[in-house]
Image 1 (tube, rainbow, N blue to C red):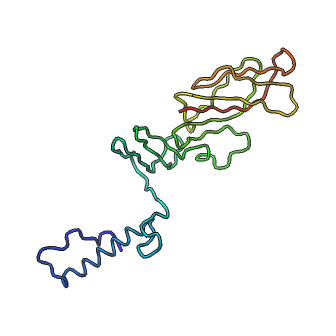
Image 2: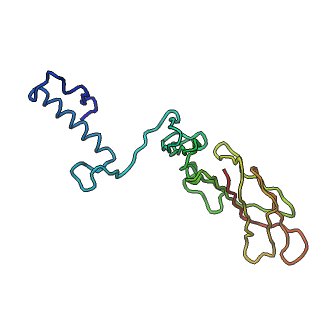
Length: 200
């Protein structure tokens, strides 16, 4: 039953039971249809509870009252697909479902990647090579969000049986400095490593 069947203007003072019954029945039907969207039916166990939640696509980010938390569906300029956004009580808004999986559903092993966490934190990871003191820049592209601040980072030497070691020296919002050396001698060496960085 279409929502247009709902009539908010009944009953009127002059209405009688017989004359307004068809309109009341239409209203009940329209309300039933509304409740049945994403809800357990009136007559079923758990009536009124959600069995799923559907967010229609918004053309603009909606405004929320200060202190409230809101969820909505909006096209992300980074991933260029619809993402689930959250506006936190502080007013900060971000696409909590956005990640490398948004634009690359099946990344290969060891592919650099990124993801937003539900808290609003952003994590990036990847692999690289350092020989001596080497600056490693985080990937930059239209479909990769940038850090405003990095709060933690780390590196792990990779390659079984290699006599090399990667040490994180410093990090910033755009990259990190990693020192690659031999493990058992005082000398630089090409060192393969994996890294992560967490920020926002």
